[in-house]
Structure formats: C-alpha cells, structure tokens
Length: 221
Image (cartoon, rainbow, N blue to C red; front, side):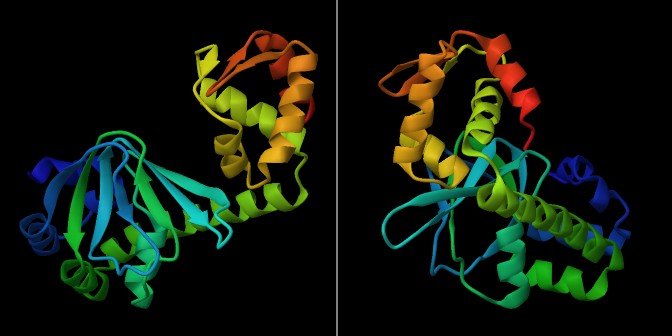
C-alpha cells in the first residue's frame, strides 16, 4: 500500500508523520472503463491520484454540446477536483474513465490536514494545479484563435498514435476540439477529398500519413 507514494515525485519529500497519515487514510481503488467518476453538482469527496489509466474531463452545455477540457493520465491528479476541494465547491464538469483505472483516493479530511500542516504537500498540489491551469489556457486559446483544419490534423495524429485506424466519430472530434459537428464534417470531407483519410461509420482511417503530418507541421497550433 505504501509504494504508491513513490509514483509521485512531489510526495517523496513529505516528512514521515505526514506521509504516514496519508498512507493510513488513503485507499487504492479500481474503477471500470466508462464509469462517470464525478459530475456537475456533486461535491468532491477525495483527491484522486491516478496510478493507471486515463480520465476524460469534459464540460456539457445546456444544449448538450460537449467539449473536452483535458485528460488525466497516470501519475497525475485532477485540477478540477483540486479546485473544488480548495474552494469547497461542487463540480461543474464531469470526469469519465476512458480505460480501467487504478487510483489513490485521499479523503477530504486528510487532504485538508496535509494542506494546512505540510509545505511539501502544498507545493505538490499547487505545482500540479498551475501546470494544468496553463494547459487549460492553451486549450481556450486554441479554441478561440486556432484554425480548425490544423487542429483537426493534429488531433487525428494524436489519437491515432502508431495506428492507421482511429475509432472516433465526428461528434467525438467536435467535443475534442470544442466546435460544432457540422464544422468537423466539412473539414473531414476536405481531408477525404485530398485522399489523406477514409471515413466509415465510427472510425477514420489515415491513408496518407506523410501528407497529414506535413500539413500539421506546416500549420502548428
């Protein structure tokens, strides 16, 4: 149970009493894929430190339109959870397990105690918080000022990784890029016209990766 501390470099420097109290109160949990971990109007009960897996944090407007704010990967914590714990506020977005997860759950009481008594724990929390806030500002800048075609090319390559086939819909891509599905559909039609991709229901196949990569390099985001 104690080895999870070593997965987070910022916690290794904790003084022994603080470390021991965190380990004693925390628990390792497992969450299956597609679970809604938190949602709007619900208060946070724990600080979650992700050991394995990936969480998607997204905002849903009243009209049902979605926008992906960020993802939490192994070795990270959720900035929205941190903000809500610090401000004693309810969640305003939802977090969904994209894969099976293993995470450390630190109860609110233990979080509050460590924040008030341990400078090392505060540095750990605020370092993660500041990095994610910077990432969120970049996301807002991309949505407000970035070209959809270049952002779409980068996103397709990111989602594909080493694969050619990307299991994704136009609605998924619209949520990822914070735009309308119709905009994505028009741009995907243009990519297909250029013979860079091929589309089928629920998936996109990259058929000319060098051309798509060259376009992405020429149009950085």
